[in-house]
Structures are given as structure tokens and as C-alpha cells.
Amino acid sequence: MAQYVNHDQKFGATEAIYYPGIAKGVALTIRHFVVNMWFHLMKALRIKARPGAITIQYPDQRRVLPAALRIRHRIKLNEDGRLRCTACMLCETACPDNCIYIVPMESPEEVPEEKMPAIFEIDLARCCFCGMCVEACPMDAIHMDTGIAEMASDSRENLVLDLESLLKPGPIVCTGPAFRGKEILELLPHLKDVRAMEHQTQPEGSIYRVGKTNR
Ligand code: SF4
Ligand code: SF4
Image 1 (cartoon, helix red, strand yellow):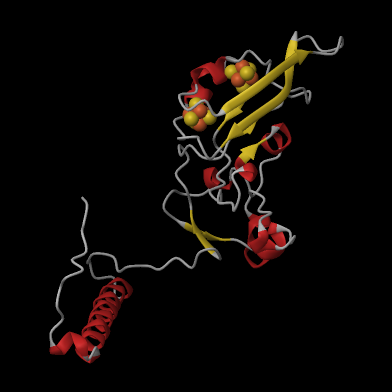
Image 2 (image 1 turned 90 degrees about the horizontal axis):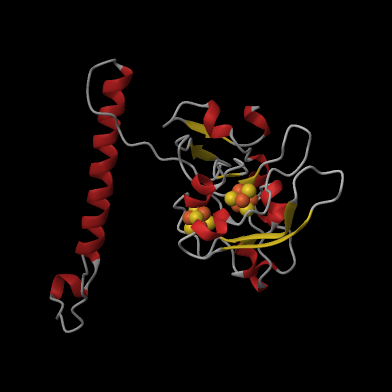
């Protein structure tokens, strides 16, 4: 629902001196603190009550994502290490956002599949994470189960996943001026501990901590 700011609103004397507003905010914070403490105390005493609010200390703590969540894509290999994708273009055709770009090429002679992708790109900036590409793939080659939710970047180019990053999913790279040439893992070292598929081994709704201390 749209909300509009009334720029012509005149403030009264109490708003003009701010202090009543500050006191109101502090009172609200204290009320939430006391109410939460009460529910946590009830839980500690094993008395049935609604659960108190829990603050997740992201990024040190993460909520375990649902196993069925469609998230950053990956391309699978066969058991013998061959690319599963045969560049059939079905995912590209099924994609409603036109964000998949494939250029096929002839496979080498020793490979039984006729074709393989020379270029396989997915533009995450356009993707609506509908999962149609996964459904369309006859080779079970494309999956959206990496559990990697960090997909922000400071440039649209970095949101285009190429074949290499689809085969080895990791955090999105940021290269803009704000990063001044630093590696993303240098700035956000916790990301290297995000392990693909981790969400499938933990109960949904629980929280896990990333970092060596919890291994
Ligand atoms: S999830 Fe949907 S929008 Fe994204 S690449 Fe696949 S088909 Fe296209
Ligand atoms: S990922 Fe699947 S649907 Fe897409 S081109 Fe490769 S084999 Fe075809």
C-alpha cells in the first residue's frame, strides 16, 4: 500500500523540541525489551508461552534456509566429471526473463554428447528465481540449491554468472570503486565459510554460525 508524506504538516510545540519523541522511542524500546525478557524467562522456567523474539547476528549467524528454496544456480557434472549440460537450449527457451545466454559448440570426439556449451551465462540481475530453467532441463544439469543468498554486487556485470562460476558457486564478486581492488573475501571473510548444500543438512528454521569456531 502506498504511503504519502505530508510535507505541509505543521509540527506542534512537543514535536519541535524533540524530547517527547525521544522519550517515546526509548519507552517503546524498553517495553519490547521487558516483554521479550518475560517470554524468554517463561521459556527458561519451562512455562508455556509464545516464544520471545530472537535477533540473528547476521552475518556471523545465519538462519538455515528451507531446502526447497530456489537460490543461486549451479551446473552439475556427471560422475565421471563431464559437463551434464548438452547445450540443448531448453532452459534458455523456458526462461521467462531471457536471462540465460548459451552458445553451443561441437563436443570433442571422446565425449559421447554431440554438443556442449562454449558460453553459458545467467544474468542474476534479470532472474526472477522462478525455477523454470531447472524444470525444463532434460539432463538434470541446472540446479538452484546452492544455499548462497549473498547475491549483491556493485555492478551489473558482476551479476552475470559464467560457466566457471556456475560450476564452482561462490560469493558474487564486487569490483566497483567502493571496493578499491580488494577481494570480496578480504572484506567479507565469513563468506568463504558458506558451504553449498549446508542448509539441507540442518533442520529448517534453526540458526548456524559460520566460522572456524563452530566446525
Ligand atoms: S530461475 Fe527463472 S528467470 Fe531465473 S534463469 Fe531460471 S528460468 Fe530464468
Ligand atoms: S542446462 Fe539443461 S536445459 Fe539448459 S542447455 Fe544445458 S542441458 Fe539444456
